[in-house]
Structures are given as C-alpha cells and as structure tokens.
Amino acid sequence: MGPAIDFFKEHAKRESCTTSMLRSLNECQDLSDYFKQQGTSFSTLRMMQIRARHEYTNAPIFTVAPGLKGMLKETGLKGNIPAKFFTGPFRTSYLEFDPAEDRRVLAMSKTEPADLVEGVFFQEQVLDTPPPMPQHQREILELDPHKPVRVIDVAFTYSPINSADKAIQGAPLVLGDRMSYIQIYVQDELEPIAELLERSIQFAASDPLGMESVGAENVEAFKESLRTNFSKLTKILFYMHVERKAQVHQTPAKELEERILAVGDKKKPKLQRMLNRVYDRIVVGPMTYIPLADRLAPGEKIKGRKATHYRSSYFAIRWNGSGQAKVPELTKIKESIINEDQLKVRPEREYEIR
Image 1 (cartoon, rainbow, N blue to C red):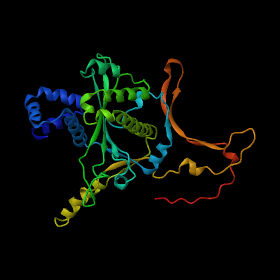
Image 2: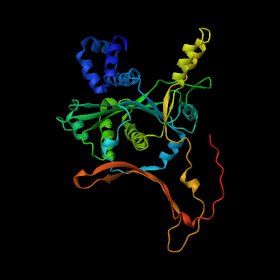
Image 3: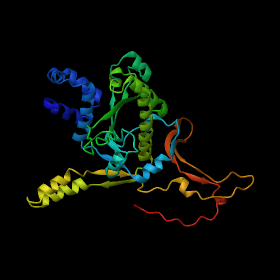
Image 4: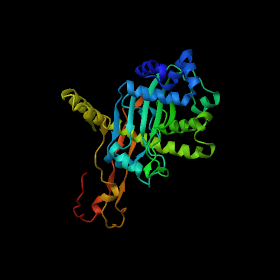
C-alpha cells in the first residue's frame, strides 16, 4: 500500500465499499499518481481495500462445520426468496467453506478441481445513488440512477497451495492468494434472489476489464462457477439467518496471546511462532450429519400408497400476518421420510463421531 496505508485504514474503518474507495482515491492526486506509476490496476486496488477492510475492522471469520456442509449439500433453495435475506451477519465478515485443517487435505487431493475455493469476503455498504457506470451495464442491473442502493462486495478466495499439475522437486507450487471478485447491487429488497444473482453474473461477464484474466473462451465456465459458488454462499447466509444460535466461538489466537503475556522472555518466541498458525473463528452449524440416503432402509410397497422415500430440506418463504400487514419470513423446511411406517424394522447402526 506504500504511502496509501492510512488512506486504506480510514476507508476500512468507515466500512467503505470498493467503489467508494476508488472514488475517493481519484480525488487524491498524489496517491492516484503513485498507483499509476506502480502499474496497479483497479482490480488490485479493490482487492487491497477488501483485505484492508477485513483486517482493520477486526472482522469475524465464520467457518462452516463439516456437518453443516453435508446438510446444505442436500438442502434446496426456492427461487422466490427476497433479496433482503441475502445479507451477512455483519457488514464486514469472511465465510470459510471448510475448516482450514480439512481444506489443506482437500487442496492437495488430485481428485479436486484445479481451483479450490476456500471461502468468501462478504462486505456491504448503502450508497445514496448507484456509482457511475456505462448505460448498458446499468440496464443489465436494472438500476434506477436516482435511488439508494445496497452495494455488496463479494470476493471468493482460492487456495494458494492447490497446484495439481505443477510441482518443484515433488512439492506443490505455492501460488499467490487469488480472488474472484463481483459486486452486487440491491435496490428492490423484495426482488427474488435468483433473479438478482443471475443479473449480477451477467453484469460481471459484461465487464471487458474483468474478463481479461478469464479469457473469452472461458466466460461460460466463469459464469457457471459463479452460480455454483453463489448457491453455496446463499445457503450459508440463509442458514445463519434462520439458525442464529447454532454457532460456537473458538478463540485459540486470543488464548495464545494471553499465554504470551504471561510467560517469560525465553518461551515467548516459540509461542509467537505458533500464533502464525491459529486464528479465532465462529463455527457455524452441526459438526456431524447423516446423509438422507443412509437413513432410509429398504421398505415394502403397499398397494395404493407411494413407496417410502425421502424429501430433502429447503429454504423457502412463509408469509405471516394478514392483508397489507403480511411480512415474508425465511424458513428452513426440515427434511423428512415419507411413508416411513412402511419401512422394515431397521437394524441398529453404529456411527463413528469424529
């Protein structure tokens, strides 16, 4: 960041979106000239702002528990859920898709795709009006240039150690911390989230500067990867909205810092090195989950009734109240086994809890 570190700190504390930061940077001639001389792109500046905002606000890290990952894999989404529920628990946060101790194993697996998504920075700010942009992009987003807008910076991060095909002397090639960035604009909070996200994907694909690193031949694959990542992200946000108490705070970094203050000078260096390997986080959801298919034992078909089958859970909207006072409430419909009474007596099963 060079001479701009105080500039980024200030915008981080304001919890500015990347667009607000760039507008302000353009008004600071010295800093603007500095980054031009460095050859720093707008995309890199956005990434710097996102990281700085997370760091300088001491934003929380939410980690998806292994059981929740399995549960959400079997959980569907209704397309009519309003955009108002697409919001983070805080204005600035990071969501980890896997615990770090599991992610390293997955990243090194040859069966995994070349780019392993670790998680996502999720940052919000409300602006009085949308930022200036070409008319065709504003039309894609269906934005009213005179109305307030909720701007969401979404930056998916990738594992820096996942290099399946390249290695140096048998060791994986360590890459830089890459991000896949997209900005989402919300003006109508009751608009179906499926429509909003699809427009946002089309908007990202319409930006020639953003697509330079992707390549014209990979645009469709880029769109599909965004759809996959958005589906995962949306389910996590919805679960956190519905199950607010299903969280466990883990503070190994805080506890280690307290130990460092309490020990003598000889022991401090070792503990300080350990501090580089731990971080505080909030673990979300159950640690274990039994897949629906494993819960369903063979059953007999009874004439005139459907065979026993399972129905996956899904997020949906239920309206409460009456008349104009009706309000949408996000609900998780629990999974269920239909016609369970037709099942044979199921033997007891043993599960290993890890």
